[in-house]
Length: 73
Image 1: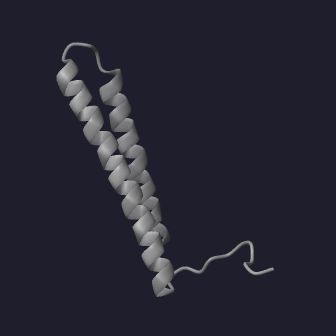
Image 2 (image 1 turned 45 degrees about the vertical axis):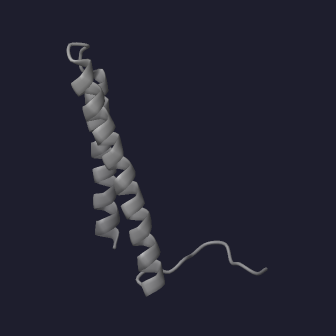
């Protein structure tokens, strides 16, 4: 599970880096710059949602256990 979370975070950071690259590229071709940046940010949102769903599924299946503040005190 830790490997999956690590890979998802690397994918999220990679897509943020790609969006930064497209944003910082010169003003030569505005249309392709904004399209690439939007695509990279859409991938980031998709990776984030996938990570959240995977964590919920792992919790429901018992692969991970919640820790921290106890409920019901």
